[in-house]
Figure 1 (tube, rainbow, N blue to C red):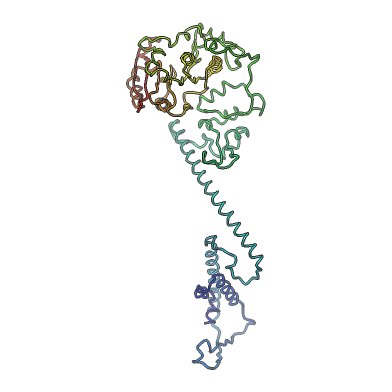
Figure 2: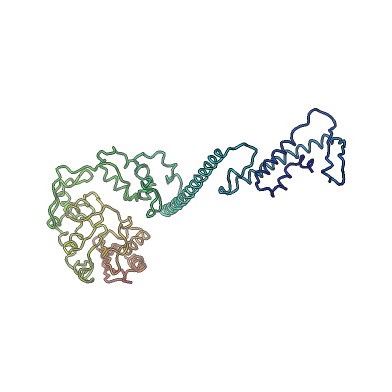
Length: 506
C-alpha cells in the first residue's frame, strides 16, 4: 500500500476527507508528491526494495522477507514519471480552486495546517488583517454593483436620447453627429465640462435624489451643437459675460434649452434708474436706461413704439405701444373670436381664478389686465429683436425667457388658467403641439381654464387635425368660435379659431 501511495500520492486526498482539516491532507499529499519525485542516487540498473511483511498481515508472514525487483523498461518509467507530474498539476489546481472558491467567511488562518511555524501573535495579526481585507473587498463589491446600476441607467437614457434624435431626423442616429459619452469630452472647454458634468454631493448618497451625484439639466439638443455650446461657454470666469443674447437665444431655439449656467456677470445697463412704482408701472413705458440695447436693432423704446408705423414684419409689431391697441386688448367681448377677460372669468365662481400662465405673451399686457383683477399670471416670451422680458419685468410683472418647446415648469394640477394668443398655431409640428396641449392639461387644476386665443390654421386643418386633437387630449369645450382670416385675401382659405376649454373636474 505504501508503495502505491509513494507512486501516486494524490490518492491520499481520496482517503483523507475523514481528517479534521483539509489543509492537513494537502500538506501530506504535497510532501509525498515531493518525495516521489526525488530521483534515486546513482544510475544502477536494479533497485532493491524491501517490502515489510507487516504490510501483508502479521499472521501470514511472521518473518521479514526480502525480494529483488527488476526495474521496468525505460518507456514504462518515463510514462510513470509523466503520470506523476500530471497528477501533481491536477492536484494543485483542484486544491487551488477549492480554497479560493470557498466563501470568505470560511477562510481562517488556524485551519491551514501547513508545516510552517506560526506563533499565536503572528497568526492573530494576520487573521485580523485578512478579515479586514475581506470587509474591504465586500464594500468594493457593493460599490461595483452600484456603479453597474448607474451605468445601466445611463445607457438607458442614452439609448432613449438616440431614439428620440433619430425620430426627429427621420432616420437612424449616426455616432459622428452625436457627441455622447466620455470619448466626446476631449475637445470641450473645461468650463463647459464643469457646468454640465456630474457633481458629487457633499454629504454623500441622498435618498431623495437616489444617487450621490447631481447632473445639471441641459437640453438634449445641446449635444448636437458642440461647437456653439463651446463658444457660449467661452468667457473669463468672474468677469463680464459676452453680450451674446442673440447667439444664446438662437441656440436655445434650436432646442438647447435650458442653456448651461455660466460663471460670469451680465452687462448692466448704463445709468440704471429705479422703475416706476406699482400699479403705475403697468401702463408706463419704462426708461431706456433699464435695458442693455446691444443685441437689438432699436436702441430705445421710442424706436420700438414707432415700428407700428413702419412697413415690414416685426414680431408683435405694436406690442410696445401701451397707449395704442394694447390699451384695449381683452376689455370687450364681440361674441366671436375676441373674448373678454371679464366674460371668461365669469365662467368660474368668483375669486377662484387666482394664478395662471400666458404662453408667448409678448409684452405682458394679458398679465397686466389679469393683475388688475387680482390674478397673478406668469408670462413666457422670447426676445425676438426686442427686450420683451425686460419690458414685462419693468411693468411689475413676472416674465420667463423660454420657448414653447420647453416643458412647462409647474407642478401638475396647480394653475387656474392658461392663455395663449397666436403662438400656439399650425407652425408647430402636430406631434409637438399635441405634447404641448397635454402639458397644459397637466398643469391645470380640475376645473381650470385653457383659453386658446386666435389659433391660426388652414381650412382643412380646422376640423381635420386640430378639433380632433383637442378632443383626444380630453378638454371640455365651453366656447368655440371660428372665422376667416382675410388680410391676405379670401383665396388663401386661412382661418382663426378661439376656444375656451375646461379641464374636467373628474
